[in-house]
Amino acid sequence: MATLDNWQKSSFSGGGEGNACVELAATPTTIHLRESDTPTTHLATIPTALTHLLQAIHTGTLPQHP
Image (cartoon, rainbow, N blue to C red; front, top):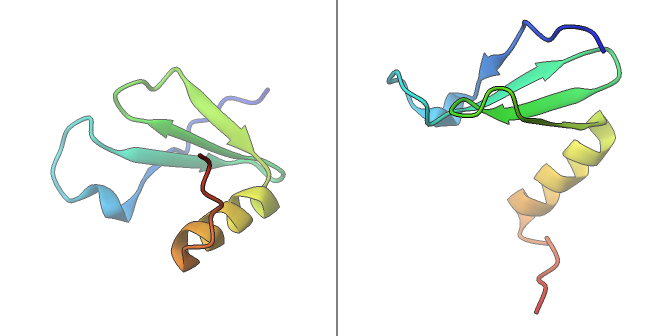
């Protein structure tokens, strides 16, 4: 796997410094997500799957589990 050195902080994480941030890095085929307080642990997904998840969250159509 290529080194991910282009992590970007979410604009929703606020303007202050600290470790309460969601960060994202992308390769041509994969999106990587991590929390800044645990930078060595990250999730990887494809853009289409992340787009569907974010749309479901935004529209409130994310299925609820009992």
